[in-house]
Length: 193
Image (cartoon, rainbow, N blue to C red):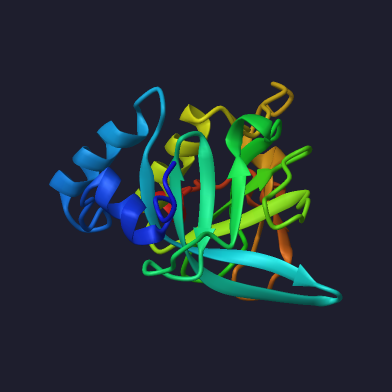
């Protein structure tokens, strides 16, 4: 690649406009066709989790997936990426995170031997988006780029709702569903509502 061709503006120009995938069905459809290519293409804002010593912090980055790489930029006008990750070297898994950052849709890449150009070797890269539509597109781009998608394992041992439990969102206490045995229960998946 020529000098400057990895700048955020050059990557945006190369991929083309994506639009508001969170609110426009046509933009979502166009972006879906980009992430489903053999070499997926996508860009947008991501919240990136970093651990610095004992501190845990989030920062907003402009991210691009192209050429089998994830590039993280300080902004959409940055001349060079702060970090670049070769997706084929990330022999890990990507999975959704339920309880991560309030109001955002998060996922995590478990990158066993994924070394970034910044020299760091994150064992886990936590990323968040502003909408479920964006999250789905990022997950598709990562999996199309070669990172495995990890789904919750169903070992077939659960035979009843009453064998499960959930965390009460107000108190943070675990609530066993067995206390509702013999009652009519309505289960709502809030994440998809």
